Amino acid sequence: MSNGSSITQFLLLPFAHTRELQLCHFWLFLGISLAALLGNGLIITSTACDQRLHTPMYFFLLNLSLLDLGCISTTVPKSMAISLWDTRAISYTGCAAQLFFVLFFISAEYFLLTAMSYDRYVAICKPLHYGTLLGSRACVHMAAAAWGSGFLTALLHTANTFSLPLCRGNAVEQFFCEIPQILKLSHSYLREVGLLVVGVLIAVGTPTSGKLGFL
Image (cartoon, rainbow, N blue to C red; front, side, top):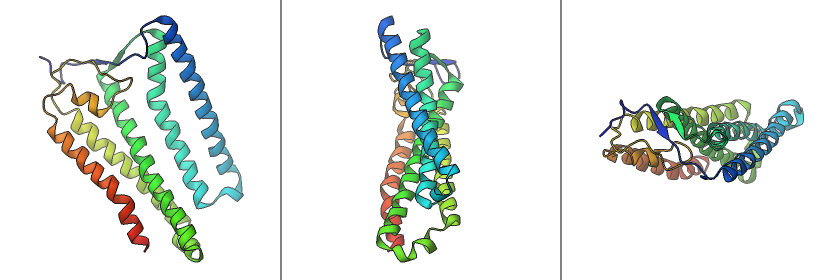
């Protein structure tokens, strides 16, 4: 039996066990990463440099592109390294950091998409009040709330997950660290399941409450 303090590294799941397929996976993910970097980089550069694109919609798109780049940069490079160097190991601290940033970028992206849906709702349903309801200050506050909510969500779940005793080895059945796979290594997971249920309820209720606030 082992606990969280005795585990110094985790073993991630490789995409393939033959060298040819591992290299194929590396080049495929490299191409996807470069395409994502180019596409999001163009959006960020165009939005920042073109004065005509300094509108709420493109401001949110710029933030969304930053979150997309962060999410890809958190998981894909390690997976590529596993395939290139034929190693599955990731340190305990590295796994916790990866889990935190995955949750941070995904949660912030969800909250930002919710803010973008509010932006489109006001633009379509209340066009005459659009400039008043969604000025530059309101957009900055909404984006900051999305980033901040993502940070707090990631911090809460990461701290809670890695405070559980890990008694079932260190093999993670996924190519990156995620909560369900870490919970499989623990006997005591009801607390984290409760937090996940609360998170789902908040996620379902956020769009509804936001829409009611505009009505």
